[in-house]
Length: 458
Image (cartoon, rainbow, N blue to C red; front, side):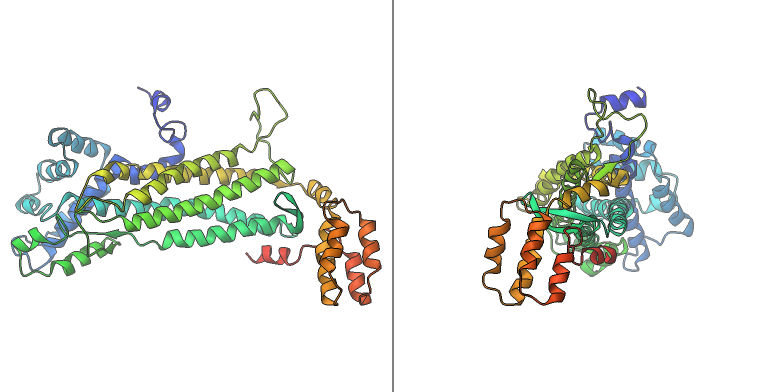
């Protein structure tokens, strides 16, 4: 079956329509990636045991064998993964299949490893290997794939904030004309939110447990009762770049996973908000979209240039959030010391992150097509002189006028106000000449407060 047919028959669009966009995630979240990380954890554990003086029954490995370990991980191939899966078909146990593969196939010609074969998976429960592998998958995919993609989107919003910092735009609160801003300031608002979200995502510490069947080092102490296993295993987990969780049942309770999923979901929600606003700005004509030669906007209306990238992004962020929120609610819950309801859920981690990544890709592509339309924005804001009721009544408050808000409300609320009628009102006010001159010179487009400066500082 050709790759094109494979794509056509894929049940998930992540492995079908969007497969090429998600290649960066496959080494982390595929079955191949999970098996490879299991091998990595098992070999790291074997190496740690051999290097410790407490375990005299297992000799330290030679430089050649340690290099062989590194090679086994670096060169782990699809054929290796397939070999493990063949064993799993017989054992009906994925981690045990990987252990057998290491003993009977990969290291069968290495006498040092064969001599220490029973220390492979020593005192471990499968969850020790799995939870550590999952933590590595999440941490490393976040740092290598997800955060760089988010950074590109943030950088583009910052770029737009600076580029459009001085371009006046009529705000809309409740869909109605409101105090003006600048288009760049609105982009800066998004960038600031996303920076905070990024910080929260990056700050999540991925935890792992390595304490045996129900978290009490039962098997460890039965073989080596004098070893400080909590200290030893903490050092081991930390050597992998993870945070050690000392108090668990059979499974690591997935609280750090839930923190990460919630943090990514918050970023997704911010981006949904941004995509919807930009969609509206396109609809209002504030943004034009660069036309790509050969693209079709509508099957029947040739004139259309649809904001499809922002629509696609919104959809993917929504799918991602539905999964992430289920994960964060379900994974921290396990009946007594263990049930298996987390297993199938954990296999969908890459699906949730994949949809987030697709959303980021679509959003970035859409942002790259945007061009401001100053003429449309000027026409919109120049037709909203009523927004200057705010500064006028605020100056009136300064100089002690009675009920200035109500006086401006009577003049402007629900009515279309012309430049002339508003300036006539200002001309009749008894306020200092300098303030009167400033109000008379003010236009909706110049009434932008500190918007431009704030946009430039993001």
